[in-house]
Amino acid sequence: MADTARIAAMSERYIEEGLAPSWPASRVAWHVRHPESVVLTARSEGNLAAFAIMQFGDDHAHLNLLAVHPAHRRRGLARGLLRWLEESAVVAGTFIIELELRASNADAFAFYRALGYTESGRIEGYYQGVEAAIRMSRDLRIGHGAMQA
Image (cartoon, rainbow, N blue to C red; front, side, top):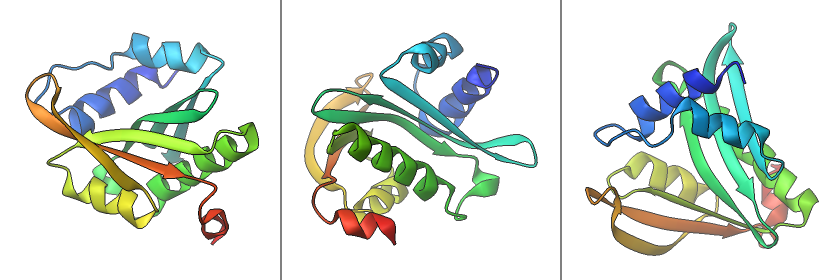
């Protein structure tokens, strides 16, 4: 709970830039408390370096947010957080992970694609009528052994 304001600030700055913030600390806190959500953080020298929020359902999970502070990018933090969430999903018997990302975020698209996520659609105006989203998903039953590498 102590990190909810920091997570909200990182979301606003690195995910929701140019949009009205939709992930205030209260929404992050709801996910911290919710039994079907997981909020992960990664720290470097005591500071919040990265976070991920995923909500689990019966047959799929939804990755709500994933962000890494720019000073800590390209060090495997996002991959590590996502791998932990994927393994948790498999243990829970949830094999499909879905997510949306801003259509303009080519780096995020390449990141998810490299990890086996495929584009499953595009939603015009998804982000507050301002920007389209790319919907991606991964079936963890396909190539599950690759997650171990």
